[in-house]
Amino acid sequence: MGNTAVVVGGGIGGLAAAIGLRRIGWEVTVVERASMLEDAGAGISLAANGLRALDELGVGDAVRDASRGQYNGGTRTPQGGWLTRMDGSALEKAVGTPIMGIRRSTLHRLLRDSLPAEALLIGSEADSVEQPGPGTVRVGCGETVLDADLVVAADGIGSKVRSHLFPAHPGPVYSGSTVLRAITEQAVDLRTDFELTWGHGAEFGHIAFHDGRAEWHAVLDLPAGTRFADPLDELRRRFHTWHDPIPALLDATRPAAVLHHDVNELRTPLPSYTVGRTALLGDAAHAMPPNLGQGACQALEDAVTLAAALATEPTVKAALARYDAERRPRSQAVARAARQAGRMGQQLSHPLAVALRNTAMRLTPSRAATHMILRHHAWVPPQLS
Ligand SMILES: Cc1cc2nc3c(=O)[nH]c(=O)nc-3n(C[C@H](O)[C@H](O)[C@H](O)COP(=O)(O)OP(=O)(O)OC[C@H]3O[C@@H](n4cnc5c(N)ncnc54)[C@H](O)[C@@H]3O)c2cc1C
Figure 1 (cartoon, rainbow, N blue to C red):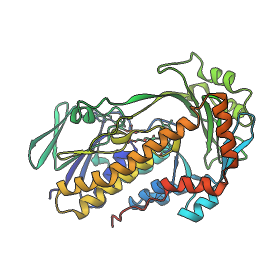
Figure 2: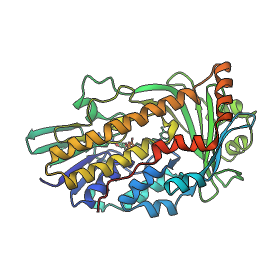
Figure 3: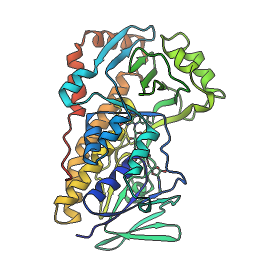
Figure 4: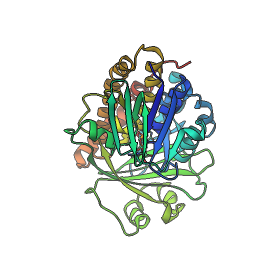
């Protein structure tokens, strides 16, 4: 089989795919429409499955060095009572690592640094993907035409490649929640590495970084497209009665640092992650709500699985069939679980339902909570070496 690939999209998924393909000896070009390759967003948590995928890609140690282990934290009520405590050491014992918190820009830079500059075509938008012959797939980017043996569509939740390949698919829909988030300007005195606090139809959470600064996020159930004239002021108004350190996190933030996005998801599952010589990967294939912190981890799993299949199967066709068979059931199950976690978590707003959920959570032993998390984290990557 040939060994050239074009990856459309230079987000976490696309860069990881490119690294995986290069590790198995393929020539790769990443086409990214943004003129600067910097993943927007604040922070991200990486669970054992994502970290193991990064290990296979050769960047696991560098990512761990730049991250903070999320050992101590859990879920709380707005008054500060604990619903569950999460023990990162128990996760570490079970799967070798606690969840790690890292700035998105740092993760993105570490992935980018693993690729040669000439592999990145920055500021180029892919506008077509066609298969001119049985052994070739062609990506058009304005005047530039790139022919390859494989195209990896990692162009995110709004994937144009996906809508071209699956014109009847309804595409992404609004999850019902909008999220505001930022990284604090300075270090904050935090007693925990991470927390999630659930009110009625609202959530506030933080992830601490290794330099003492933190990412916070506020999720609100509001109509799609809702925007505030002064987002930080609006959050202070909504969250000023919530427990410490929530007001302190907002106070440690510059207004201009606040990002605001509606959370969309691919609620209708795709019938396949491959068409001809094109593989869909990451959010392009299975964008999910962020409630389990698994979207990027699943994209990293995709990247390693795709490279391993191409390294071992005799043809691109056989490799893509294996990629689809291994990735679709797993990632779609995680997406379903993430949606369910949102419904039972921050999206729950009826007072009786919230009270019942909170009681059930308080009664759940932390060992059982850890066991539930492990279902998604205990993934073993195929070896690329
Ligand atoms: C609020 C929030 C919190 C989250 N927290 C976590 C977390 O803690 N842990 C976790 O694992 N996941 C988390 N996620 C999910 C995670 O962010 C995504 O799953 C992940 O970033 C998807 O990566 P991707 O590379 O598939 O897509 P993207 O990051 O969207 O990248 C797609 C790239 O393709 C480019 N592109 C698009 N179209 C074209 C084109 N036509 N030509 C060229 N380039 C193009 C875009 O510019 C972009 O750079 C969170 C998501 C949200 C919304």
